[in-house]
Every structure is written in structure tokens, then in C-alpha cells.
Length: 191
Image (tube, rainbow, N blue to C red; front, side, top):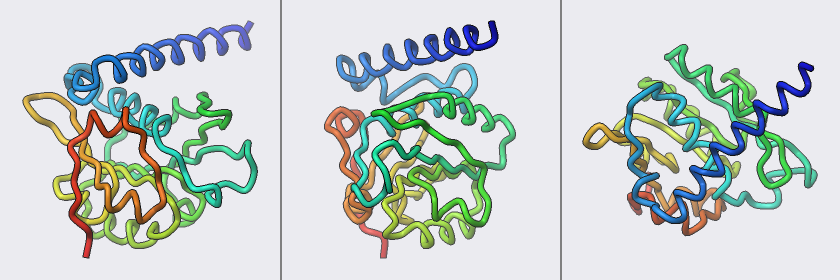
């Protein structure tokens, strides 16, 4: 019975994201400006799921075709624990594994989400992540100028995001046009 409930929950989750995915293709500006009603981290979780779906990592990022996509996050907000719900999902034949930040998680990450305002910590981790093919996602102003790949921001009470194309190229991340059409593009390189 528990197994059936888990499957039903996973199917509901997949259905919700399939609808969000279809909307992102048909109505990209709507996805790029999701209202900030409800729980902010649940909305961000949906975006992160779609970012993972619309990014291709370099082959060397995975040892085997079925290796998990590892999402590591560092957050000052306990409500960010909702990100652990991604652990039950699969994208492109790979399971998603979610870890809270520890010293060693950068080395095994494919996605790193910064839910913190601590610029010193952010810069330290961004420096550690350089050249590892990690999709870095932040939520503080200036994150893309610090060298991050995707930056959430709020505009007219809507959640939007910027993509630093230069940072993505340096990490050998290929972003689909469906993702880029919804983003504000930033081409400033981190110095």
C-alpha cells in the first residue's frame, strides 16, 4: 500500500512538472514570471527541476549513464528543505539525489543551489565549483556577476531568472532554447 501511495505521489509530481514543462514551451514568458504566491521554495523547486531538464552536462560529469544528478544546496531558510522532494524524481533516465551542503558535496554536485545571502561563502563555493561542470543557481543580487550561472530575482512580485551565458560556457553546460527564451541573458564575465 505504501509503495502504491509513493507511486501515486510521484505520478502527481511528474504530472505537475509535465504541465509546467508544456507551459514553458508554449508560453515561455509565463514560466519566467511565476507569481510569488504560496511557498517560495516550492516555486523555486519547480524551476530547478526544469533547469535540470533543460541543461545538458558534459559527458565527463558522469561516470556511468545511470549516475544520479546530484543537487547540493546551502540555505539559511528551513523552508528550503522542500528541495528534498526532488530526490524522488528522474530526469533523462537519471535519478535526482539532493544533499544539504557539507564540505565535500561540491565535488560530487551537478547542481548547486545557494539559498543564502552570505557573499563570502557564495564566492568561496563558486571558486571551488569552477571547471567542474556544475550548474550554480543563486538568489542574491549580483550572483551572475560573481560567476554564477542562474540567478533568481523578483520583478513585480514575480519570480524570474537570469542566465550568465559566459559562466555556462565555461562549465561546458549546454542550455536548451526553451530555457534561454524564458531568461534574461547576462554575458558579463566574472573577473
